[in-house]
Image 1 (cartoon, one colour):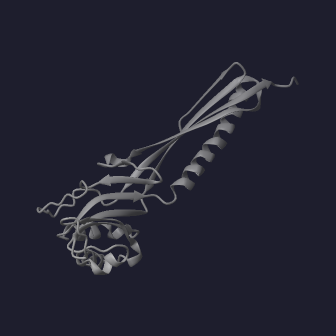
Image 2 (tube, rainbow, N blue to C red):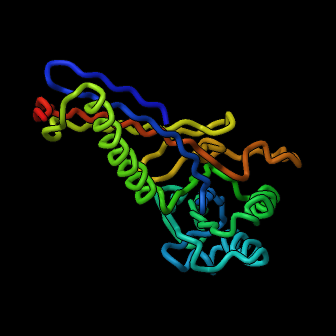
Image 3 (spheres, rainbow, N blue to C red):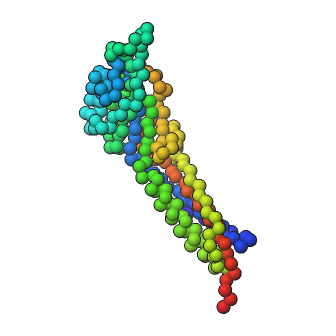
Length: 230
């Protein structure tokens, strides 16, 4: 925990820094499925043949039905006519919480002819609470540091003048791709929307586990007053 302290004009400034590592506890796989029929809502999961095939494939790997969410449907019409037989592009989100099976699930997705993995959204459920704990720890340490500095200077603390914080992130271990998506998740794009590749390889080509570093800096300024004479 690097630290810095200074005293000027009756103010003691303490700056503390800490670094932490978080591992994702879930990941959302966003998948585009090109299907030969058009349905909306939950009916797509049972009536659109290609989407239903994706669901069955994932259920064979232990993914629960509640993990699937239909995010959007884009119909392809002929001469302006929209029917059940119209082809459609379905965007499906699959929430994966068993991190030990993520690799198996993604490998299975690569074998689905009509499905393309668009992106992975790595999530950190406990990140907000952890950030608060880290900040509180720095705040407590800043008071201890200020008291030690005040004792060395022969003054006493009169109270807090100002407190500020700064929190930022970086990828751990040089992980490739992705940026902070906000809301406690990282987004790693896989393919542009609507793109389909005939060639598929055995290599996944992207990380199947995800860690990130969170850096926390706190700056506290304390007012001082002369120590009482003994």
